[in-house]
Amino acid sequence: MSLPRSTSKRSGQGTFSDPQRTLEHLSAAPFGTSEWPHFEARLEEASLLPLRPTGLDILQVNVGYVCNQTCAHCHVDAGPDRKEIMSEETFAEVLRVLREARPTTLDLTGGAPEMNPGFKAFVETVRAEHPADALDIIVRSNLTILESHDRFKALVPWFAAQRIHVVSSLPSVHARQTDRQRGDGVFGASIRAIGALNAVGYGDPETGLVLDLVHNPTGAFLPGDAQALELRFKQELGDRFGLKFNQLLTITNLPISRYLDFLVASGNYEDYMETLIDAFNPAAASGVMCRNTLSVGWDGALYDCDFNQMLDLPIDHPQRHVSDWTAAAVERNIAVRNHCYGCTAGAGSSCSGTIV
Amino acid sequence: MKTYYDPKDLKRFGDIADWDEALAKKFFYWYGAAFEDGALTGREKALIALGVAHAIQCPYCIDAYTQDLLQRGESEEAMMEAVHVAGAIRGGASLVHGVQMMQKAKSLSM
Image (cartoon, rainbow over all chains, first blue to last red; front, side, top):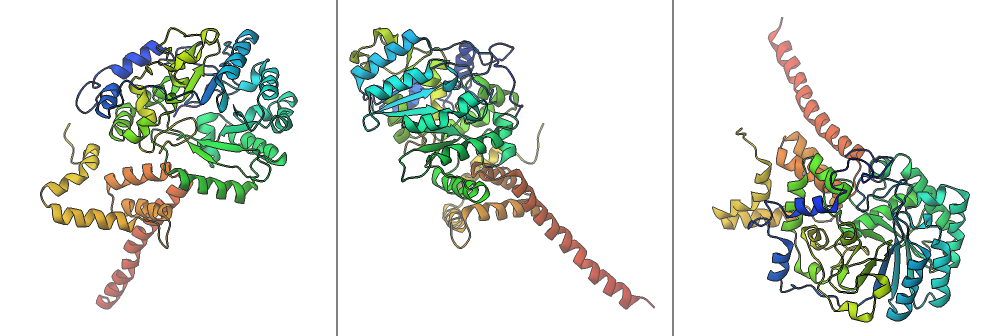
C-alpha cells in the first residue's frame, strides 16, 4: 500500500478520485457475466429490487472534505487542501430537517468535522433543541485532530458536555499497520487522544459517554470476526496503554476513490471484487444502512449514503437538496451500483459496523 | 505461461468432493472442527497453521493463513515469528541428523 499523501488526489493526478471514471470501471467487464453479476441483478434475485427506504432513522451529514489527514483508503479523498465546507445556511436547513424528521441519530462526518468553523455552534444548537435521550449525535472524529492544536484539544471536554457519541477510526492495534493506512505518527497521536477521551469519562459504561472505535482492513481483505476483533482490541489497548472504549465497529472498505486506486495499482482488484461478489449475503442486503439513512452533502445535496455522495449519485427523487426536503423524500428507489457489494458481503457493513 | 500451482485452485478446493463426496465431507468436517476455538484460540491455531504451511511449503496454505491472520488483526511481527519457528524446526530437524552422521562416521572410522 502506498503511503498516505499530503494532499487529496482530486487536486493532483488521482485516477479514481473522478466519480465517473470510478463508475465506469466498476461496471466494465467482467461485470455482467455469470461470475460477476451486476449488484442490481443480485438484488433482483433476492427480491430486493427496487431497494426502498424503510424510514429515516439516521441523518448523516458530511460537513466538509477538509481533513488534517490524507488516509490511503479514504473514500472521501479528504485532505488539508480540500475546500468544500458546509455553510451556515446549509446547517440551518439541516436543523429544519432534524426538527421535522425527528431521526434517532445525527451522524456528523467529513473530512474532519471539527475543522468546519461552524461545527461547534451547529452542534450546540442541535443539542439545545434535541436532548441526548431523544437524539444520538455522532461525531466521526479521526482522533489526531484532537491532539493537533489547543483549540481542538478543548473539544474533548466539550464533547462530554454535549453528550456526543464519538466514533473514531483505529484500523489496527499495531502502529505500523495503522500508520501505513492513516499516516506517520497517527497511531501514537490516536492513543493519546483516546487517553484524553477516557480521562473525561469516554469508554466507561457508567458515564454513558460512548467512544466506539472503527476497524477497517489495512489491505485488500475483508474484516475478520467482529466480536473476536473487539476482544483483541480491548485486550491490547487495555494491557498496553490502559485504554477503554465501548464497541469496535468493523467496516468493509468499499472499492471507490483512493481504495480503488490501491486495489488496481496493487493488482488486487479482481480478487477483492470476487471476494465481495461471492460473499453477497441477502440478509445483509435487506438491512443495508441506506434504507434508514439520508446523507447530506457539504453543499446540501441529498444522497442515499456517503459513498453515493462521493460518486455523485444523488437520490432518485425531485427533492434533491436539503432545502427542498420533506418527509415525502422517503418514497424513492435507492441508487445502487456495483460498489454496493461492499455493504452486503458476509456479515454486511455499515457506518455502524456489521449488519447481521 | 503454465505453472504447477494456480492461486484460483484454492477457491476450488471443495471440488475434490466431485470425485469422492463421502471422504471430502469427512475431511472438511474434521478440518473445520480442528480450527474451532478450544484449549487453543482460533488465532493461535491460525499461527500454527501458518508455521506448518511454511514447513510443508504449501502455497495455498500460506496465502490462506496470511490473509486469515491479517483479518484477525495480527501483526506482521507475529506472523514472521511463526515462520521462524517453522524454519527453526525444519533446520533443527536437518541438523539433529548431524548427530547420526557423526555417529556413523565415527563407527566407520579408525
